[in-house]
Image 1: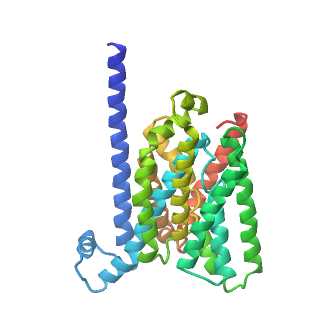
Image 2 (image 1 turned 45 degrees about the vertical axis):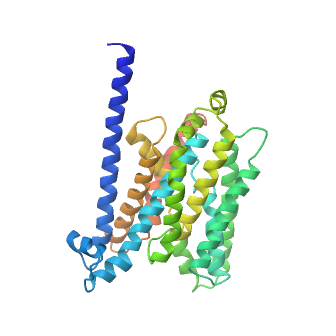
Image 3 (image 1 turned 90 degrees about the vertical axis):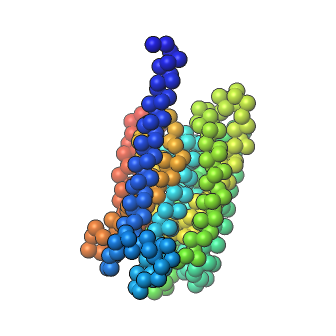
Length: 342
């Protein structure tokens, strides 16, 4: 068997494996979507759900499924996918498993702005979402500007991001301590990351962002994989790494800021989706579609656990935080033992 034949066989095997992984993830996401709309105080079979989604008016079911559960499911699907893609892009681009938007402070600016609007300005709804979007983009620009030097350094950007995130988290803590005790629960619900109370109007910005930005980011996936090989190799191949990197940063930051404005910062979804999808696909860099599906499945699965697995209902961010925190500790220990490289 020639070398060329072996390479061709390996490509076919990788393609089949990839197809199975993506199909399994897609099936898991569809299952979670149906469970999100089926389970609750009133349980509805799939036949009723499909009739409601087709536009048929069914007393009781149309309101519960169409106005309460469908927006919750769509929020989990869109926000989870956005977090998954954004996390995988940052981790691949900076070649560091810690380079997740929620770890390096990109989401912290959105959180601080939203808490300020809720506790100080006494705003809610659209005002909070708009402030979260603007602050998320501004905080990312600040981190990028402060980390610039003679040559791009992912490690420097991560350290600057962690520092900026710590400042924003301190602002949030100060606002919570100074706030009226009756206003704090509303802010805490937002900080923890929750799908509770999401309405159709709040989902529209995230849906529009997904339709516009997802294809743009996926189109740049091949360039992202070249960047992951290193600055020198990317330059040798004739690619303008800085331009591609700036495009990816702007696209993913807009995506993560808009998504955060819908549900708040759902902890560790962006951090976990890339490594999970990478391990499943078995490739050098995580597949962005697989990362998106993983993020959606993780978000909706955690939401179902938070709603129905315990006597008390927990926001989705609490469950994802419980899942993600041990992995973060494991990763930090692993980096420490390897002398600074994950």
